[in-house]
Image (tube, rainbow, N blue to C red; front, side, top):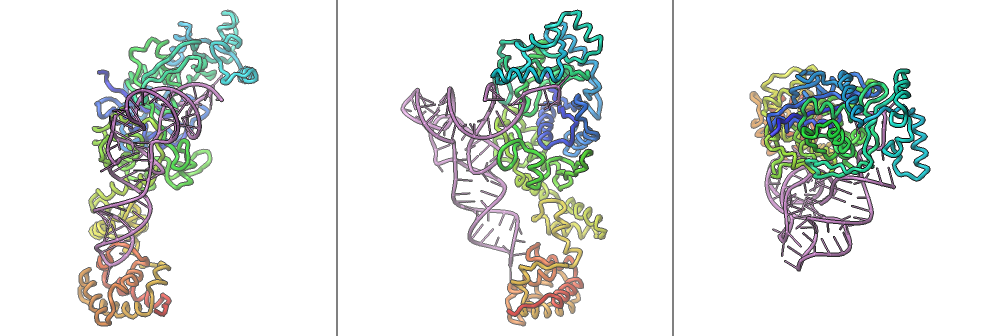
Length: 511
RNA sequence: GGUCCGUUCGUCUAGGGGUUAGGACACCAGAUUUUCAUUCUGGUAACACGGGUUCGAUUCCCGUACGGACUACCA
């Protein structure tokens, strides 16, 4: 069997879309599974859409999620350069080959002339006006002009493009690994521009030439390329490369969570989830879009989630490490239909991955947040807190955000809990509890509990009735980890002072 | 509009000529947790529609509807 060589070929027109990450992932999984090669190629043939920083962004994004590149942009390799803008002369040579074989031709039509042609056809009732086997004979090109005229135009510096001479009547078939046989009639394909007037190739030419030169075995890309895949097949044929033509696999699209259509940045913004792997600042607008990394997603969780959007192993297992994904992945098991993006599930995956970590690893997340807040904390304490908190966090930042009361006395108190649970009875018990605690010589969760039992027993009140009030005074909220444990962690003095503060400042309602 | 691709619970999906159509997320309820979360148990919920083929179709075929992609000297 042929050595597997796959490529991820984004164009640096902005941040890498999350769908692109999934495409890269599927390529990567196949490469790793087969001990093949993963290539990164930058398709920057459109100079007008080039965005500075985008290429670096793509490389860094892949690095962050753990998709490593064997060959290509950023790492080099035997087929360098891997940036298409640097391969111009190569494409030129192959375009010439097509012209020599009479499979391509020069065209000199201006944008206005093309518009006129389309306009004319449209009014004549043609559904899809195109530059094709019929219309090309009325246009200004090397098929309609004499050799001398063509030479004169080119020598005179008239801008021209090179177009593919698509046959008028031919069935073009391709066997897609995901979709099976797809047949398109050549009359549906127009004479695509291969070389633009600025001397750059279009996607179609550059893509096919590079895939051939780089010995690509599988083209795994988004479904948006399916309509032009037959054109690429035609190119392979005209180049005489049919026997080494890669296998195609067109991936289902990622759709917006509600309604229909391709997942876009707008949808993500509206629903409040990231669309880019890393935070991206648009150099033109200055607009900043928070990335998955910055939002607190773990790379493995993201990849696991992404892998399951359009693919599944056929078992009920859902949590897969990258190694397990590599082993289980099968192109044939990729779905045909587009998948709506469910960010709830992304969060669930994140939660699962977070929980699987040790308290010690999780403590690092807390320590990081604390560092930003300029709060010092021993690692031992952080580990304890991480252990107490781990069942209730989704993101690393939650350790701090949902656990600030471990370090700071509450400044605000949940009003719902105040109005429900804060009454003179609670104040009475809490005051007594405060006094009892302040007299203790040793203090931990157990002692806190027995002391509370003693105090409530003495006052003849069920501990349950005031427990939430106690929690409120300590944390400011009505929910959270085990209260006794919280008290142990913050320590006796802090417990006394927080209760004291709450008792003295919170307005009391008659019960 | 045209071409191509698609359609199983709200969502991601398994399955496949005869099944109580399975799982996960989400949601709801109960239990446990004197709180919240977790955990456990249970529940609501799907084969787009119409024709064939067949003893039998959600599964195969054809249409229709709906959705999507493409329709540039963008990728």
